[in-house]
Image (cartoon, rainbow, N blue to C red; front, top):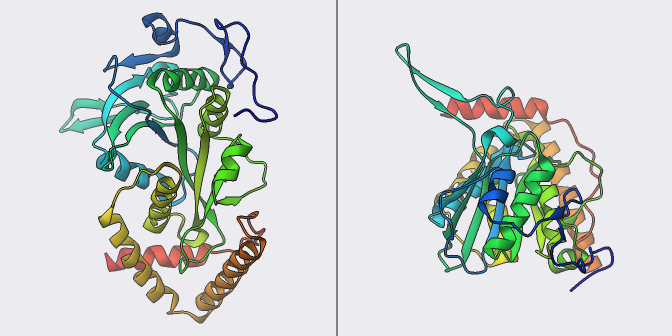
Length: 331
C-alpha cells in the first residue's frame, strides 16, 4: 500500500530507485558483475529461504551497554545461522580506524583477525527464515552499501527489515526497558506500540537501510531500547531482553534466551543492593521512577504510544563509576 511521499514505481522496468542515493538499479542485480561492483562475495549462491525477515545489527553506532549486540548474538545462535555472503573489506572498511587484531605468540605472527560485514541465514525455533546482517558498520561507501543490501533483500525475498539498537536514557533499572521506533513508513509506524522520538541526530547505517528498503517496498523499522544512563557503560541484559521481546512482537520470531533472562534478575538484585547503600542514590532512583511512571500514565490516558518524555538527563557519572567498581569487587 503506497503512502504520501512513497517513491513511485518507475515506468521503465529496467530502472529502479535504490532509496539510498537516487541512482537507478540496473537489471544485472545478483550477477557476478553486480556482485563485483557492490563488493559482494557469496559463499552460498542460492540459499533456500522462504519470505525471510532481515535482522540488522551493525556495531559502531549507538548501542548502549552492548544491548543490541547481545540480543543479536542470542538470535544468531538460536536460529543456528550460517554465513551466506560477505562484503569486501577493502570496499567498506577503513582499517586505519578499525585495525585487524594480530595474534602474536612468542614472537610469531600467527594470524590476523579482520573485521568483516556478513550476511547469515538461519531459521527460528518457530520455523521462520531469518537473514542476519551483522559485523561492523561500514566506514565508507554508504550509498553503495545501501543499494547492495536492498538489492540482495529483494533477491532473497525479504519481507521485512528490523534493526536493533540501544541508547542511554534517564530511566530507572527498576522498570522494564522501554522501546522506541524509527521508520520512514507512516504505515509501519501505526502498526507498532513503541514510543516516538523527535530529535535531530547523526544517522547510523541502519537509518540508511530503512530508506533503502522502504524504496523497494520492504517494510523497515528500527527498534531501540532505553538503557538507564548510569549503567550504559556496562552490560545490561534487561535491554537485550526488551529488544528480543520487541522483535517477537513485530515479526513473530521468538527465542527463549533463558540464560540472558536469568541475568536480568541477577543484575537487578545487585543494582538494588548498590543503590540501597546511599540515600542520594535512592532519591535519584525514586525521581526517575516517578518520571517514568508519569510518562506511562500519560500514554495510557492518550490511548496509545506517545512521544518520549523530555526528561532532564540527571548526571549519573558518579553512580556509574561506583556501580562498576562494586561489580568488579563482587566478581
